[in-house]
Image (cartoon, rainbow, N blue to C red; front, side):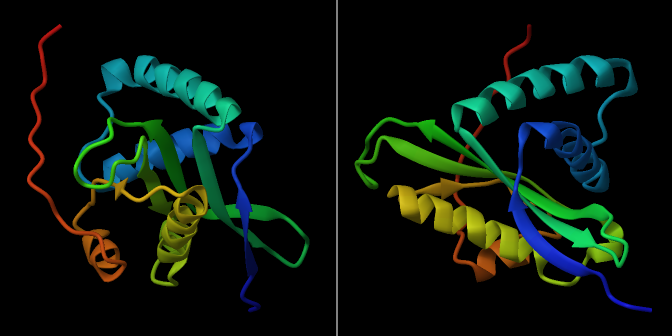
Amino acid sequence: MTIPAIHVRRVTEADIATVVYHRQSMFRDMGMPTPAHRADQINAAYQRWLTRTLAAGDYVGFFAVSTDESGAEQVAAGAGLLIYDWIPNLMDGSETRGYIMNVYTEAAFRKRGLARQLVELCVEHCRGLGIQLIMLHASDAGRPIYEQLGFKQTNEMRLTLDK
């Protein structure tokens, strides 16, 4: 059996459904599946947001794509980067931050370093834009990869307001 070749490419508007699927799968694998009674609403809202931010250049995504002998492609892994305005502060004075999200590898392609490679691309993209601070939320499985890349855990707190 031949191991399929894998190449990396940018996410396009045609890939939005795959990004949404990866996001659902990522949360499911972390034990936080989308509630069935709200899945359509949440996915539609995320798809609208992603369409808008991708078109504006505020979301940049990367896919690791497997190509078999017949030329058929399968997305093996993905990672996204949100570039957003932030208040300049004592940490770096920058007005822009990066937020890495939607990091997911299909089960058949895990343990090959694909997620790490895609996260490194997100970091390099930030470096190229002069972004000095990159944030993310790590799953238990992803935490060692992020720590190896130099990410540090912080003391961020959160308040969720009732609707």
